[in-house]
Image 1 (cartoon, rainbow, N blue to C red):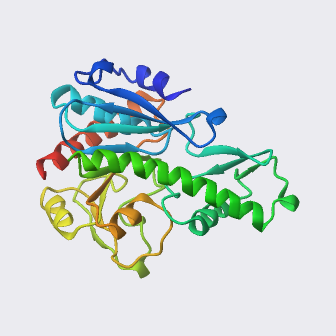
Image 2 (image 1 turned 30 degrees about the vertical axis):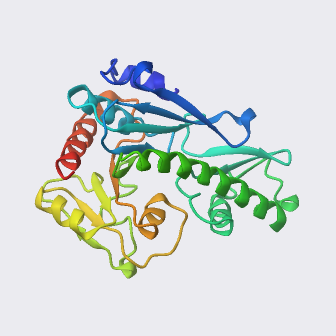
Image 3 (image 1 turned 135 degrees about the vertical axis):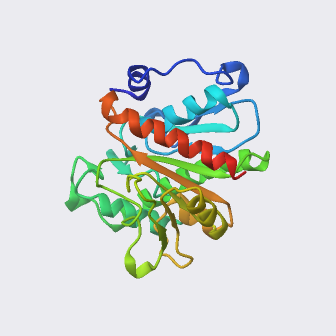
Length: 278
């Protein structure tokens, strides 16, 4: 089921500030035939720069749409292709996949992230014997170029005084939580709020934002200052001194409205809290 169909199932309604008149447009990325694009929706008012990199994380999109019903501000940018978590490109007769939150670095870093997906879904057909280091280098370069295109679009909006940069994500129950997002050896600062689901949390790159969200009673983790470059947007933001929030909540598999509704409510509440800090 594609994202728009999922949102219709969840009861998504037309929202003030989301019309074409307010500035909705698409930006094609990579190979045109692969139909990878950014969909940009401007609320018409300055505010946060919301970015949804994974095309199956629908609750995050719905949370912004719901929040905009009462307070339209900022811009929402979605990366869309197949309705799946990973994106693909055809290179050399093969379909290669990449995590769209792991391509914001130099080609060698992106290539390592592509390798981490194999043999799960990185190369179709899985002709591993004929897929050598040179092919991997080319793939890393290609997806890093797409990452640069995404960053250029984000940069345009940041340059218009939109911000901060807010990555929006959904997870499945127990797959990721405020204590597991970083290794203990990386020594992140973590605050676990009493009574809050650990799968619903903020990740931030600035200590002041960590303290503010902790005071408001949310799960929050401060990304360590020294962390390996994995091509993620949070690492890119920290290294480029861009104020960044990751708003993470269940449920990535959100076809069951009853299961997803509580986390939709909570992620909307998280967006409200975030704007109170601006």
